[in-house]
Image (tube, rainbow, N blue to C red; front, side, top):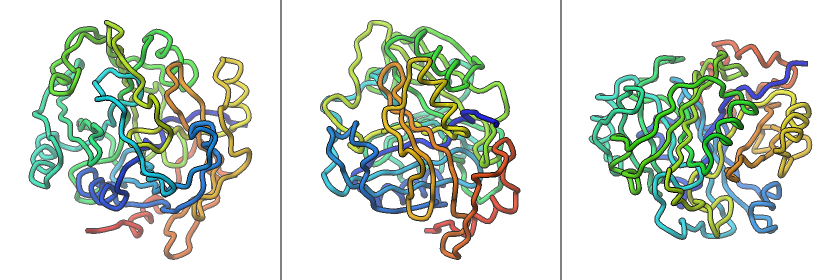
Length: 352
């Protein structure tokens, strides 16, 4: 049986105002295809919520032009808390989402004209890419960069998520984990210094080591054609002055709560990760229902206790309002869904 961690599936972010945040992500990131939007208890997350079951609303959204999804979360059983300190770039946790676009200049003009928060100037990364950042309604950072792999055109200036940046405490340990356990085995760059593209962010003027990695193999999975190539960038502050972003807070408090990976063959993946010293911290055991979507979800902690979600998908909506669903449990996970199925998702788009 084929077993693999196929790559990044989505980036999870918890917000204070669900409807306004979803509208913000549609407007500026083109994330206008919802897979599900439901309210449910979250007993799976008790280990990360002080052993008390919370209730939350969750919505999985996608930009069909290309890129990974986002899971937007808003607790309904409590008021989410912001970080207990002012987060600086390089603190431990998921620091920023990376969004791909077709033209950096066009996206820069568009987000400014459409009222995005705290739009930075266009700056250059260590590998020569031109990027800029915006903030969401809760102050989370998103960097736009030009991408090359696209699925369809919807007319929006940007695509979806193409990766994220993470603050880590031990670069060599974290790099080995994401390379050997998560399949991000190709080095894009490994640089140390003070970087122009971070100077506008709090704490961004410090000396850091940055390692950007991707997968050497083509992105697999049913949604591989849409997801395209993804990246993880690890960031270590060299003076060791960092704090854990979720210090004294719980899962579903505001911020980037997890990075989700698409998985096939969960039992074998569990055995491999446990042997490597990264056991599942929580497990839906068989299948978890989110609306009419059915998946197998587990969590692991990376070396810095950054929350990673692993998802094996069994049933997904193509056009939920028409009652069209797809059972992918027995499909060859190495083959993407046919184009006509993926393109059918356009009928679920929410247009402002």
